[in-house]
Image 1 (tube, rainbow, N blue to C red):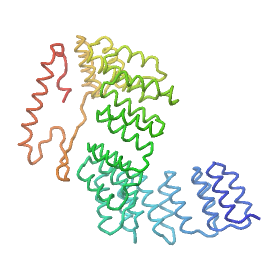
Image 2: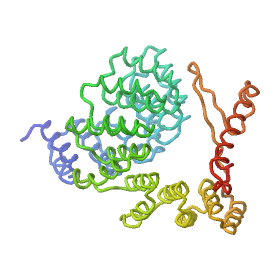
Image 3: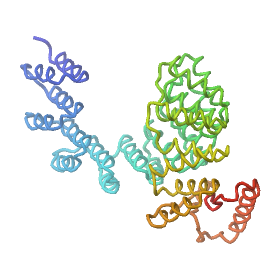
Image 4: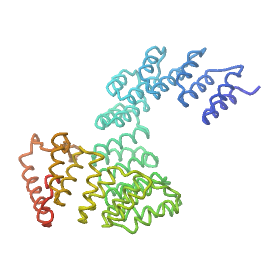
Length: 460
């Protein structure tokens, strides 16, 4: 007879391969079962999305431990049945920190943020994992400020943050675009020795790029002992999205020299860099090498970036030919890129066609309608201009979404929305903004006489 531990390990291995029937057969044949074997079999069902079978086994358990209850709570949370998870939590006899944390995490995953925070505040004792779930929960649900406040409160209680906490709070700083706060958090993780943690370092790199702090991103990357491919991709994407195409291509080649094979994201990054910097020939070469050298079939983002690259480089016919010949149906992104290139290069016939296609896909898009009106006006198609503007009024298209921007000064965010007049210093900076708007509008109006039909209001 095989030892109990060996059979339990066999059940777990079969579960990882998805062989649930074989795992259950071994479980049923076991002459002796302990709480571990029951919990392993229950977890096998949950990991393979068989929550009802897991509940049936849970009800048959001769002895339920705290692990048994927590496993079922997390299982129901994973299945999106948070109400049942909460019922189990309520009737659980001896709740420990694991079960409390599991229920808080479940509520966050169900977007019940207030309930999760309320339950967390009722916990008799919270450890680093519990606080980490709260910091992460707020950040993942889009409440970056609350995530930051929870992190500060955790530090005030004397709890030492773990790597997951730092990964979440750094991502929250990126959501807030607060450069100074990001640097403060980064100094905290340096003091606690987390700079060598790959997940934390990757999050830090992404955050520093989002806040425009390229030097810090370089520093984190250079101090990593063994950067993974995802780290290289973060660096390539970060530089390319900010218009540093040369740096992106150099990192792409450095990654290959470090014996990392580029993946789909790597090529998206280097193609974006080429597109933003006008490296037409280099972009074509990278695009062709995807399938030839790496065996990667181009996806939607690769094709759309190439269309944008061709359009920016004045190769309008090549951009349109690629759209026609690619094995994908062109989306709104493709037609926008083609239309922008047509306007820049004065190919108004193809531009009008692209505008019509764009309106077929999104007839009431505010930005799409304005782009179409502009190209119709440039082409002298005033009937189409009138028709599009009429549809914009009748169907609500062309209504601009309220935009906002913010600036970080000494760790404090100052938020401004379009037409915002409530700021205490509005009377001082609004005249400066008016002057800037006037200068920009004057520049675009006097750039070329052929731009007389352009809707300048759409620029702002």
